[in-house]
Length: 126
Image 1 (cartoon, helix red, strand yellow):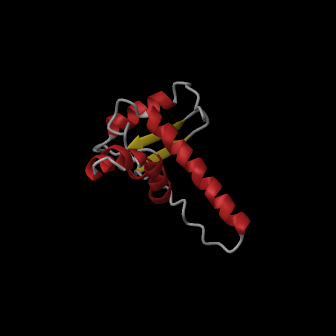
Image 2 (cartoon, one colour):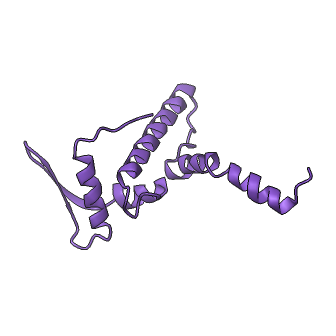
Image 3 (cartoon, helix red, strand yellow):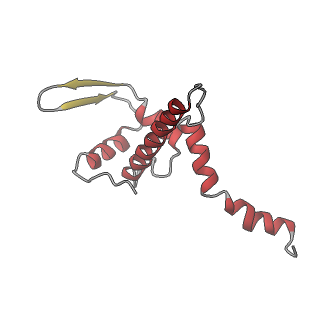
């Protein structure tokens, strides 16, 4: 190759990992899709299927986070700050009430995402 090594690294190698490598890392670290330790193939296949479904849901959640601090967040950050949050949930016949703590650091972002989710916009899986 006639290209300088640094230029080849910057323009080819680094760009190659910009999409696929990050998605694989999100699946492995954010969703734990690499935990396939069962002895039976079908069980591991089902675990991987559930991990993929969780990943797709997290991507959709990130799409609803447009304009917030979470619009470019990795799956692990979404999981830690939105899914694993302490809240009081009250279920009645007509509604489900989710009460966040008074000093929740991401309260406004979460409320905006909830409004978008409840607006009737359909989830799109492509």
